[in-house]
Length: 299
Ligand SMILES: [Fe+2]
Image (cartoon, rainbow, N blue to C red):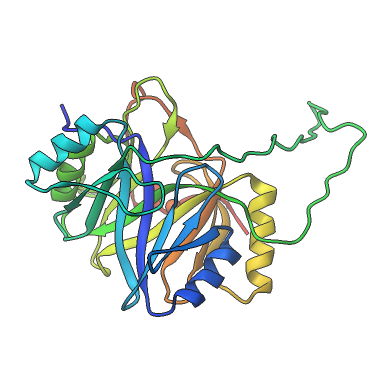
C-alpha cells in the first residue's frame, strides 16, 4: 500500500533571470500567463490554477508538483517525511507539502486547490474513407499558438533508477506501464502512471530514466487539444524563431504524437496529443533500448 495515490501531475517549476522573456516564450508555446507575487504562472485550458511556474533566479529546473484528492493524503505524506502541510499562497490556494526525492529534486504535492471550469471546444470532425463526419463545412484554422490544455508528464534523469522508483511508488502509488531494461535485463527506467482504478489515465505521468547526463528535468510535456492544434503551434513557434528540439513524430511507447521545443534557457518542453490511456488492471510491459526511442513515424 502506498502512502497516497496521486490523481495527476499538477505543475512544473523553473527559475529564470528574466520573467518577461519567459512570459513571451510561454505565451508563444500556448499558455495564458499570470504574474502573482513576483512569480510567473502559465495556465492551460483545463481549469487548474497553473501548469508552469517561473521564479526569478539562475536559470533551470526548480521542481515538479503532483495533485492528491484528499487532505488525509497530504497529511500522511507530510508525516512520512516529517515536513509540514502549509497553506499555498499560489493561485488557486489549497495546501501543499514539499518533499525532496533521492536526487534532491523538489517535489510538491498539492490538494484542495480551486479549479475554474475547463475550456474545451467540441472535437473537430474528421473525414476518413470509412467514416464521413464533417459534411458541408470546411476546416479553417487561423495562425497562432497551440492551446495548451494540461500538463501530462515529466521525465526525470535520475542517479539510481531503483532508488528513485521505490521513493515515488511508496509515496504516490504509481504503476508501471513500460519498464525499460538493458541487454543484461537490468531495469534502468520506467514509464509510470497514476493508479486511478477504472478511470483511464495517461500511459505515463512520470518517466524515470537512469542517466549519466545532467540529473533533473529531461523534459515536461503538455497536452494540446489535437493534431491540428499541435501543428498550428509548430508553425507558430517556427515563425517566432523558437528553438526546435525533436519531432514532429509519434512515439512507440505511449503512442502520443509529439513535438519538442526549448525555452530561452534550454529547458525542453513538449506538445503532445493522442496518447494511450490505461486502467489499473492493465499489466506492465518490459521493453529494451530500441523501443524506448522508437517512433512509429517521424517528420
Ligand atoms: Fe514526453
